[in-house]
Length: 140
Image (cartoon, rainbow, N blue to C red):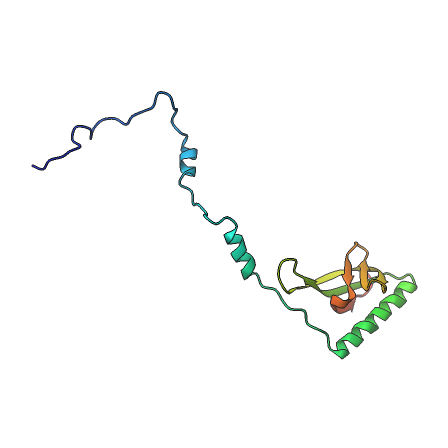
């Protein structure tokens, strides 16, 4: 027979403290939850992995077509006509180099030549230098 050093205590009941109540099961489980030693690291990795695009300069023909469309819009605004448009505009990223191309649709309120931006009726201001395409829609 083999010697068992714990034979005298093996079958004793578990000690229950008289001064400290038993911890609830939910709190005990929280002790074993995953621990992130580097707080914010996962978010930094995701931010680095997020893709951005570089701004593409327009060629002369595209720039000329854009200028002609802006002139037509200004003429229609001068006649007090609402001009429905779909504008593709480059939006610089706030955190990384580059940005993304977004489409905005709405009615043009005015073209601000001094500040070089287009104001839509909903309050959106789009810089003319970041606009890559303007499509005029039919009035509804």
